[in-house]
Length: 243
Image 1 (tube, rainbow, N blue to C red):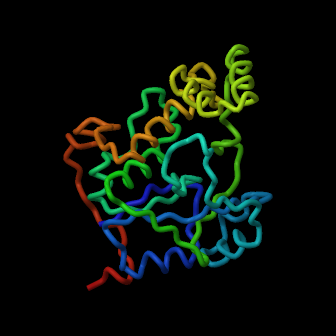
Image 2 (image 1 turned 180 degrees about the vertical axis):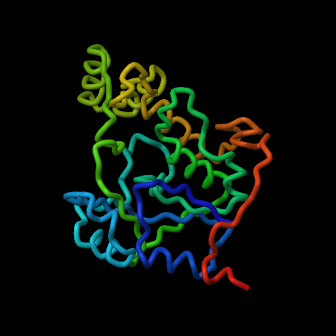
């Protein structure tokens, strides 16, 4: 069994569905693809048929999110973390090994997807990035991560960071961001909560995972609904699942 988190505002391209339907997935792999952002002028797409919707999405692509180049000061694996929360397909066994997304006591859940990707590769999972028409579409709205998240600096933090970077001491600047947890992050709508810096919350963990340090555990043993007994119902089957 393979699992990927799925957001309500994303749609899989036809090629991506075809790739998954081949049923040749490797249990030692985590599968990624790019995200294509789409701008639609109104809500008329809601009434479109599946085929018409995919055509409309393909005609209105505004931005393509491919692999990012991480800072050279971050000593981590080069993984495709850009928008990985929108598509990260992995065997259920591998998800269980990493204990899913890390528990976030701030309720903001920043970086959880990227941390999971690095945790999986630290346990021997190889990243496979699908191309050639395999991507997901995301309809743009005002609550995407980049639009609602900002960094919060104190004056001394900004001055110190600028000084170290200008002095070509970037590695020390990066370490101080981890040690002293700055700049913190703020999410629109919940401004009273400050999230940890990306360096403290993500980079520090990813650097440990790059050394294959799997002693770092991001969830308790009975994470999620481990203590609950849930009924299982099949709502629909794909043609490939019919005996």
